[in-house]
Image (cartoon, rainbow, N blue to C red):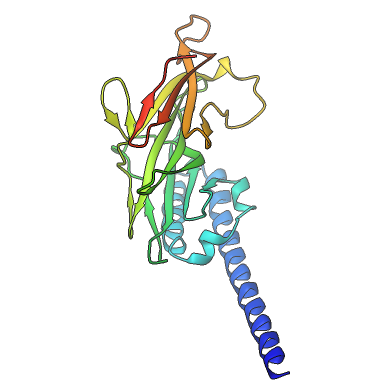
Length: 261
């Protein structure tokens, strides 16, 4: 009887704790949404726009250190910004349009990950300079190499109404650090941490999904593929996406390129 009562008390306490965590995450979600709404309505006020983007980034970095936020789905927030999470739920990327560009879109973002000891960390996107538009991340694939776990994330860049780019970038959690320079992709010129391609959006505009999905992962074969893009006068801003694919397969050591199909 005592044991049964004890289990009942533990269940009640656990349920209460989960309720508190959910409420806390919901409050954070509402707070972040307000900043995103302000970003969307402050385009004509550069001072306010810069401040809202800065505060949103700071808050994501602060809240991103909480385990509760990594485990929470943020369904409402995901309607206003891009959120993609790895299959094991140890790595997540938040990214959003800063509304500071025109047809060229500028994105900011935060990486969130759980270290080997269970602690949760956050860190900002790294750019090449003030004029770097960066991109937003739309999907994360997961690969176990036998020695470590690697995450392959799809980045989307918007250079104009029609010229766009997709890249597949490799990441890994090394202990308590996020490794953003995982050189695992053997291209024709070098061993790289990413591979990608430019394309003209109007060559795929009829596809229903947004963002357009052009990079595919085959978990069973441990390979990814993306389309061959050809120069075409009808699609001058990046080229025409074709139905042929470039495929890279993991050979146990690195990704190697297979013959084009």
